[in-house]
Structures are given as structure tokens and as C-alpha cells.
Length: 191
Image (cartoon, rainbow, N blue to C red; front, top):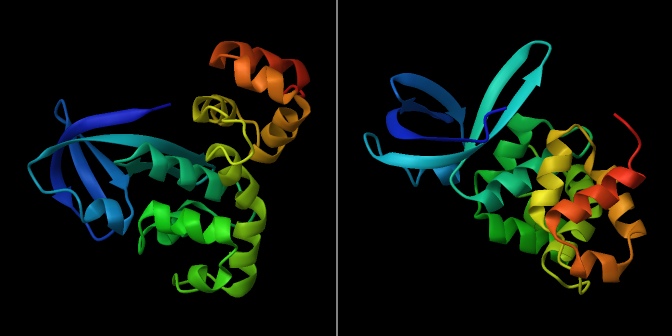
């Protein structure tokens, strides 16, 4: 799996950039927010998500880890694929989208082209708890690294959340990433 790519922007397309990395051109599908921040010929560091399905093998690029994180949360929701997730991230900064989810503001989310009321409500329902957890409002900060590692291994975010809820808050607060992963593996069903 490709975790990141660093290189010069060789070309900008309407929904992608081609990054020249050591003479190899990688097409990264990006949000409009990312596209608007990069310039041709300049060098950038992109976090990536490699999406592989029977008929698709695509790379998605993000300038910020926060945008990558929200993208991965969105594609964890049934019925939202990577193209839709990218469309959600395109019109607004990540913080505005996260605030709308935390506030339960479905009216804000339906302003995004292709997002109807039901999809907006599903996004809020499935992601609000995860975002609250990450912002520390529950008193426990779950390292995003733990989510990323488990997601990359093929576990679904719902499974991960359930397991993390089962681990006591005391253990979560004092545990480093490696120990927290061990605790998760003890409770997660084999893939």
C-alpha cells in the first residue's frame, strides 16, 4: 500500500493531479480544496489512500492528514464510495464539515451536490460519535494511528469503535499505540 507520495505537480486535471515522483507519474484523485492549494511545478507531500476493487485501482491524495482521516471515515459508511467522499470534501474545509456533523446540521450537508437529506442524516449518525471521540469531548483521545492501522488491515470502523468502547477508559488513556493495538487484536474477530 502507498501511504504517501512526495513530488512535483506535473499536471492538474479537473479532479486530479499527476505527481512526478522520481520520474514516475502518479495520478491522485483530489478534492477541490486540495486542488486549489497546489501549483504546477511545485513540490508537495500527499497522504494517500489506495482504493482497490475488482474493476478499480485508484489513488486518492490529501495534503492534510485530517482530510485523509475524514475521507476514510466517509468511505466506511455504507453507500458512500470514494468519489462521493471526495465530492463531500470538495466544497468546504474539513473543519466546517466536521463541525456540521458534530452539531447535527443536516441542512449544511445537503448543500453539497449529490448529498440528500437521508445521506446527510446517515453521515451525522455514523460519524458524530467518532468525531466527538477524536476531539476529546468524551475525555479519551483515541490515536488516529490506531484507526488507520486497523482500517488498513481490513477491519471496519464500526468493529473498531465497538472494541474501543469495550476497553476501559483508564486503559485507553494510559496505553501507547502499540499496546492499544494489542488490546484491540485480543478483542477483534480474525479477518
